[in-house]
Length: 185
Image (tube, rainbow, N blue to C red):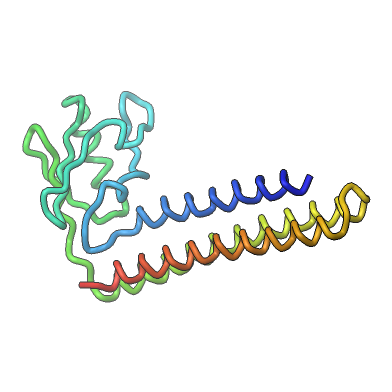
């Protein structure tokens, strides 16, 4: 009973960290990366399709990204989806590849991104704490119902606290790393 609650809590905490990684990949730093374009949807033959499924990416320079569509007929749809996205990208098409040169980040924009990263980090910590609260309720109910002994219940709660601390520290480390990445020029 307690082991199941702890395993479920660990899975959910792990998922919170994965979501944070995905969110952090979408925050632009000084260097361009394909993760920025993960949420860009292209109208491909009438169906919204993720850009990652329609093209390959190369980053020859820090601020330049080359997008090579697998299907050349989707070039204009990809280009318009990039232009319409909120990334500030200005794609140029040379017939075979789409070249994107991202503008330099301003100090003000960097500060906004740091605030966004901090907010997303806090959301992940809140999610982890919700998972802990739910697992603790399951453990407390099992002890109250007499399914497990009090010693086993308190041991389970201690393991839960250690697990929570580990994941919160992981989130803190990721957040600090992202903040450093954003503030370096």
